[in-house]
Amino acid sequence: MTDPTANLRDASLTKAILAEVRRIATQPWNIMEICGGQTHAIMQYGLDQLLPPEIALIHGPGCPVCVTSLQAIEQGLQIASRPGVIFTTFGDMLRVPGNQADLFTARSQGADVRVVYSPLDSLKIANANPGKQVVFFAIGFETTAPTIASTILTASRNGIKNFSILPANVLVPPAMHAILSNPTNRVQGFLAAGHVCAVMGYHEYLPIAEQYQIPIVVTGFEPVDLATGILMAVQQLEAGQHEVTNAYPRFVTREGNQVAQKIISQVFEPVDRQWRGIGTIPLSGLGLQPEYSSFNASSRFELDQTPLYESPLCIAGKVLSGIAKPLDCPAFSKECTPAHPLGAPMVSSEGACAAYYRYHRIPG
Ligand code: SF4
Image (cartoon, rainbow, N blue to C red):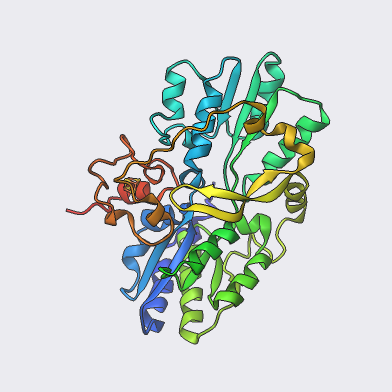
């Protein structure tokens, strides 16, 4: 069978596009790829090493596992450890360090923690276990929100009382505002995450481009997609433009998936949210609408406030804000490795530190 993405991985085409970047770049430019999936693709295909020295790629906060707050992880650990609870989560969250432990350790100590591929799987588990409370750890960006919202609607319609979520979804545009308004910001152009824009469209980025006078290019995940996104960003930067353009038209439209957006806003409302290592970003999370608040596990269970502890060696907040790169972290590949992670970016399949480790950007 022919691989439909084969020509999007064409090395000659990718190199030709990057040669054009080299030809037109007259000065240094810093471009942030927002999504951790894009960071991994850049490392996997060595695009960072093919770029001219003028173009620096800055890795963004778009790793949902990495930015899930320590407080939410601690709440998840507390809930998972209760008798009569089945705690369900995407697999990436298992090894993310909390204060002392992670969900993997909790499971080895007897907690019923199960990996699911969709929140609907959690609902099936709830249906099959009427005597248990089933809690889904609702993490992710705008990409996971529609399925989580539709699961809540199904649970509500069917009167399922033993299912709830621990809400931790986050939103991209408020994070872009936070990055751009930071006095230490170095980002001059963005590659927006194609899959987020497939859901939300890109109309919500227009005011950001205008306010901060910055080009934003909706970009996909294959080497040709990424090279094209970088070229389109550099073309704008060199021309002094600040438009929102679409380098991923095969999946993204200006308005996005309006059915999915409607489901999201039916179930969720924007709330302030803590981002791990970064802090609270106003209206950057999705909380349950009052009508669905009974599905909120953090109010269904009585939870203790625990003091939060981060490794003093970990600079994940700086890495996620684009202020530092994984190689700037003194613990990288020493105290911190995928086998013994000190921070979430070394655990997640979308974490920048894991990408540098996996694709051998290891000094010396
Ligand atoms: S290498 Fe490890 S300790 Fe350093 S920032 Fe990344 S996750 Fe944190």
